Image 1 (tube, rainbow, N blue to C red):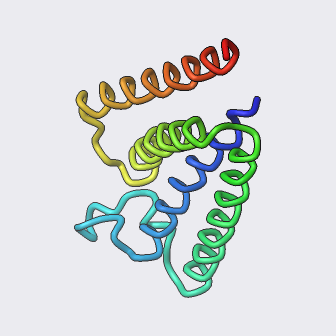
Image 2: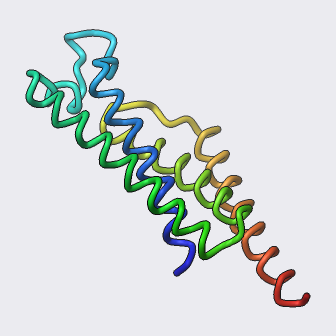
Length: 130
C-alpha cells in the first residue's frame, strides 16, 4: 500500500488542473455547446470555491507526494505519480469536459501504466537481491 500516496498525488494534480480549467473559463469554445462542467460554473462565489478547492488539492498533492518519498525510492514515486496523473487527466477530461479520447491515447496510457508497473516491480526485486 506504499504506492497509494504517489498515485493519490498524481490524481490530485489532475484534479487541480481540472479546477483551474473551470476557473479560467476555458472549458468550452462555443457557448451553445457548453459541457456539464461549464454550465455549473457561474458567479463569483462558485469561482472562489473553485480556487479554494484548487489550493486544497495542491496542498494535499504535496502532502501525499512527500509521504510517498518517505516510503518509496524517488524513481518509484515519480513513475507512479506520472502514470496516475496521465490516467486521471484523461478520465477527468472525458467526464467533465466531454473531450474525445483517441485510440492512440488509450494505447499510450496502457503503455505508460504497464511500463510504470514494470519499473516499480523490477526495482523492488533488484533491491531485494542486493
